[in-house]
Length: 250
Image 1 (cartoon, rainbow, N blue to C red):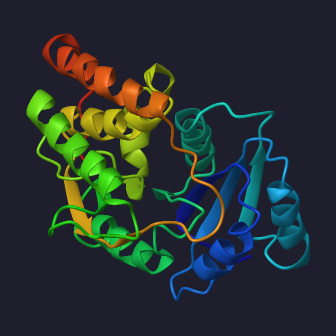
Image 2: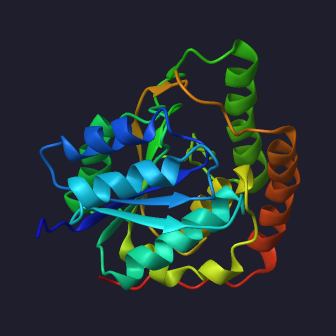
């Protein structure tokens, strides 16, 4: 069996144009990663493509969780985190299916945790300027100023607070009460980083270039941004009054 200490979680909904390509790109890396696809009942046959790859080529490295419908990005990742913990992976990654996150950056996120000793590494679009390709300027500004807004409200110093390209050490996810994570959409990414920070974990931003999807359709919506706007205020209140579990020494 192809052993790995790392699982890459990829949530999908209607990603038939991208899913096989992203799987092959991850598996082509020199470092061995495993992949867990979490599909929310894609009507376009995304899950069927994954099943075929599991049966014909990648049965020891590729795994699939199928859910009955669109239950939210946050709940997909929570399910994946629990699966990764149960299967004893030391490093658990978040990554999109649409190549906005470059698989070639996975080893850099891994190195920040496995070699440099950080507990959470973030593929950051804004740690070294604004590294976003092919996004409309309005969306770039919205994303950039959203992160500024989070820093202003919460005092949290991470530059790219909404980033969805990350590597967690397993102990981070074992420490956080995953069942108590409140948000399902855009704010989920903010909440997880903020909670890790409040628990005392060490965080590093690794500069990456974010490229807008070429194939498939974006799943972003106005409701997601609304959740993030009000959610950040709630996180600030939590930061004042909530008791967070503390990171234990390795």
